[in-house]
Length: 105
Ligand SMILES: [Zn+2]
Image (tube, rainbow, N blue to C red; front, side, top):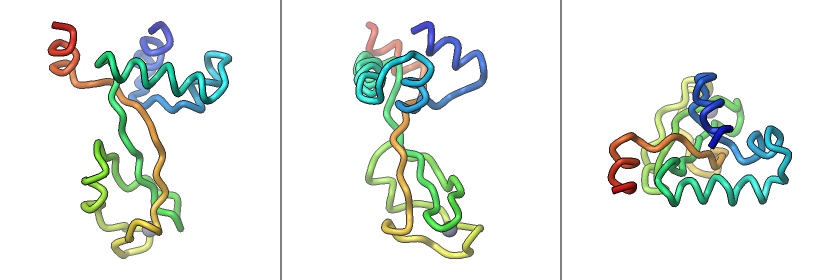
């Protein structure tokens, strides 16, 4: 939790298992389990950062796999990529406050 607070204070809204691991001295798997536990308790939620494969540009962040059908037009390549041109990165973000209150209740 201290880690989450610190990241948030730094204006960091995304939590990546790899970075959390480095920061906390855990391996990637342990960091993932920790973030996943926080997601299940409603503090964080899972998201996918969607990058353009060719340019590496962040195109959007989605909250479910359904939304992958609505990835915005890529300005870097000036085209609409299909899924195999995209790179997905699992991340966690702070859950909306409403969700946190609801799950805590
Ligand atoms: Zn592109």
